Length: 325
Ligand code: SIN
Image (cartoon, rainbow, N blue to C red; front, side):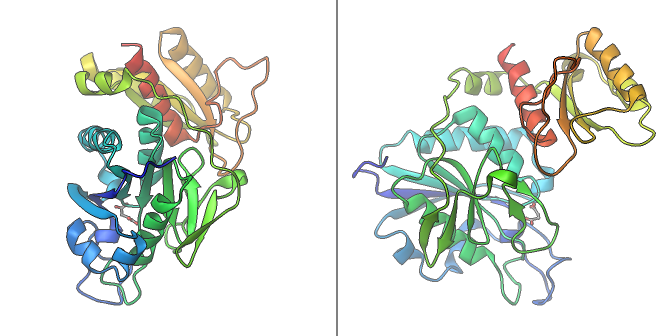
């Protein structure tokens, strides 16, 4: 996978708890995310040079945000910089420091837009850099170990010693250090003392869509796709409100519904969604279950999200609408 010329690893900083600080060293909850620059963050990581085995490290601070505030502008810049660095033959791979809250969305977005052959590894932390025992430095070392693996490719996420694929990764816990899972698929690998032990073969490289980057750059805002949820008492009023709330370029173009169980919908919500679909809105069905995926049936009147969680399906539908112009 790697050429001998690839002697550089690029680390892109975007903020998150990994770059967070608190006035109280023992405080793991009321800190401020995105305070330390990525260079300062790297200064706190012992053994960094050993981990990269003679590779040069190039650092860029792309953003400094709490990832709950992730925006179109940051995603566009991130995709552009990852594409730029991944195309450089001297670059072995890219690490992105990122908050945990929308990490799975960024991972899926980069996977869907770039389908990189080189490893692009998102690293994060559940504790701020000022914690008594921060987890960020170890997660960063593990991300670098992942980039260094000879077969590593595609968009990956590393947290608490486990390597997850972009399609499966999902935040499962608001506080635990091992906050991420890959559902039924399980993680791709574990990182043990700087070495990856593969639990399954690397996923095959995805096919890049060469026109998407240009579309992302030229269309602003990107097509609006919102997420609604089916629940007891869901009467569809939210769907009608969303259809009426915005016009012009910010008009609603698509909806993803997080259904109950196998993507089932409250009958009143379903009626509103079918009306919306008839009026030209794209509607996809996912499930609000944390694991598994919707199994399609011949009687389905609203297409399912092909296994994507609601937040990833929102991105996929948005990209589809964007690609369609
Ligand atoms: C964030 O997502 O930026 C804050 C929370 C975290 O990184 O754990």
